[in-house]
Length: 340
Image (cartoon, rainbow, N blue to C red; front, side, top):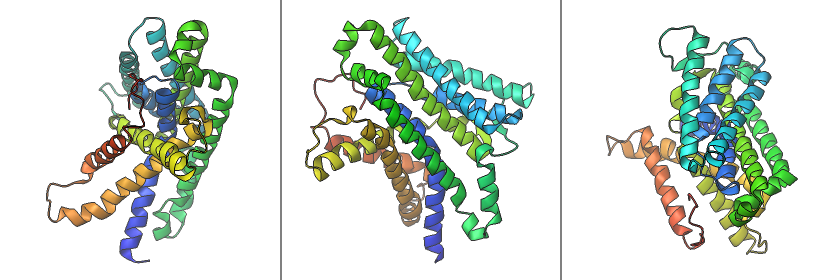
């Protein structure tokens, strides 16, 4: 394998390791946005809380599996509080999520300060091991140096976990409570008539979606073997990209172009489509980032000296603008509360 091809493969491997753990978060964000119809900005707070609480439990000697379940429970609490601010206190949706994020960001700083046993503010923490990925990490390190750099064992475990989560989300969306969430999210008029059922669906929907986001935070902390609170700062960028790209692939290319509209049900009414759309969206996001970092950036940097890797965000933004502009005729003019 030539050096250039190996570098591209290494870039793809590194990109997968940075994006696969975020797929549960993208599914959770997608469910809140499209199923519950709630533009939920709690995701940053619930992601950080899952990141920190999982690392804290591992650092204190608890099992990584227990740390995962504690992170899921923490995400459910975040989502429940956001629903509580909005439903019981009548706080607007956007503000409700921001309030929860503020609260749990402060909680995360406090937890890190306690676990690290320092008197000053702490923003990062190194773990003793990689939790559920520790065995895979040791296996990769024992392989040939070139193959080990690809971290294939860790990628395989991540991919297996993601597929299990997608299957679980599909089952939940097919259940009675999942049907209520999708029904009341799609028909706000029915929600106004059946207040109690609508409130129950909203509480469950936000708790479930944020539990997935928090689970992503736990994956990231255990995979990296460390915690850095700055990782949540750019979380919304890949999540938004996954929603746009995934919906474009599943709802437009597959349904309208390949099936020729033989399936007339919209994406919102198809549990499988809702479960897999963020997955495909993240794969497209991953490929675009790889295209920019491994191909375009080396080609253009000689001529454009200021071009660096962090400029991938405007590259992603350009793709989002193109897709949304291309699909503007598909979006209903009657739905004024849509975020995208």
